Image 1 (cartoon, one colour):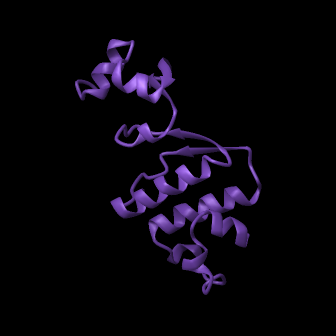
Image 2 (cartoon, rainbow, N blue to C red):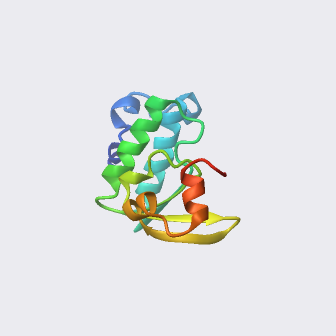
Length: 127
């Protein structure tokens, strides 16, 4: 578990309190603890569902940096309704009511979307 805590950028913050409950950790630390638990089983793919929901900007930045680091070693899938940061990732899918509307590289999807609904969502006209 030590390796997993290190990969999740949490070891230095918790190494002296391993016998304490995780409930005493901040929201960002709890999220990184969940990531460490996932890493402990050595997955091939990691699915993040709203990994930064309810986190403050500093914790959000740490999680985003961690995900960018983890993508070097793991296949990462992120589900989010917030479109402010996904450009750091290569592939993006846009869904409306469970229907895949558009799928492609983030660069193309964000700069020249093929579907009008994608363009309207990214520009804030609906959503």
